[in-house]
Image (spheres, rainbow, N blue to C red):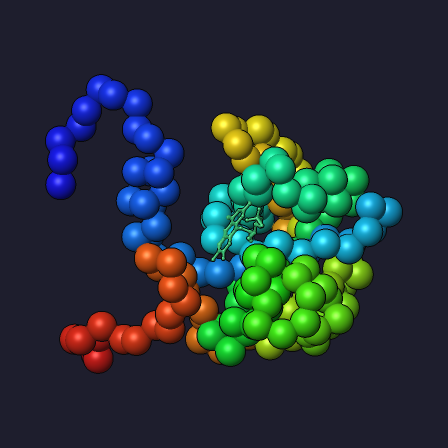
Length: 173
Ligand SMILES: Cc1cc2nc3c(=O)[nH]c(=O)nc-3n(C[C@H](O)[C@H](O)[C@H](O)COP(=O)(O)O)c2cc1C
């Protein structure tokens, strides 16, 4: 690995290196006065348990921004391995049907009225607590109103490919 250098890092080098981060895959959904929208994201993090806060980072060029800002509420759906088709539709690259189209998939209505992915690994219904612009993206911090836990294995993304978790050798206790 190269030592730290003072030159600014080229965006392509940053993206290439960060692409090796293994992440879960979520679909952020929103609904309300600005309409329904969904977007596949890997930039999701837990922030705080008391109060319960999560964050998502969304490109400011995405049409999701107007919907998220206007609706003031969103759900983070952590996809299960068998939910891969949702990830493809809401990143604009569906194998079947139209990009970003809710009609191709099954949804449950959350406690707050937000659309939740059926059989997701977990889902968090949030009201927008704060938003901050950072570079090309907007960080939305959501206060979690309802948290749902499923029992399916999560979908993982790493090095530009969808993957499944396998247990590490020596994990047996
Ligand atoms: C696995 C995966 C993770 C992604 N993570 C994010 C993310 O965290 N934030 C974001 O704004 N877009 C993310 N995207 C991109 C959006 O889902 C979507 O593909 C993009 O906004 C579509 O715009 P384009 O057609 O201009 O590429 C991700 C896409 C994929 C496939």
